[in-house]
Every structure is written in C-alpha cells, then in structure tokens.
Length: 124
Image (cartoon, rainbow, N blue to C red):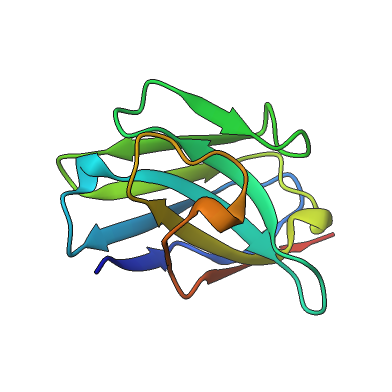
C-alpha cells in the first residue's frame, strides 16, 4: 500500500506561483511513476502532468504546458508540481497519484494510488 500526502496549496493571485509537494510512503518511491490531476466541483478529474520513475521523462496537459513543471526527488520520496503564471481557471483540488510501473501517462485508470488532494485557489 502507498500513502500519498499533498501539500503546498493555497490562495494566490493571478500571475503568481505555487509549488505543490506530494510525499509518498509505503513502497519504494523509485519504483513508482507519478502524476498530478486536478478536479473542480461537479466536473471530471483532469490530467495535469506525469513523470516516469527516474524523472527522465515528463508529460503535460496542453492547458499547463510551459507554465507547470513536474519533478521528483527519489531521495526524499517526493514529487513536485511547480506552477507559474497561474490564472483563475487553474483553481481546483490538485491530487497526486502513483502507478506501480515505469510510466503511467495521462489516463487516471492506470494509477493505483491517490492522495486526498490540496486546494489551489487563484484570484483574479
């Protein structure tokens, strides 16, 4: 079993930046590929970014490409999401997810474990 705990969310003005963290435990972190998703009330969960086990490959949703950066520190069992140039449309609960395999991609069905999420609110 893998436990995922997100942190770093909050309220930020449009144009600002935030860095989200997701700490993993319960399994060797370097054996997990990781992803970030986001969800707003009444809407479907959407893919944001993914990273493979070594951190050598990343993939982004078009809506965040060039503004968000996913990275990981396997020594700290943590994956990050650096978000910049935020706009109100980025407001959502951001969830961290893990897949027990080399790469998980954008399909949420491939992910085996999920965190509880952290709220990000961007004011205009």
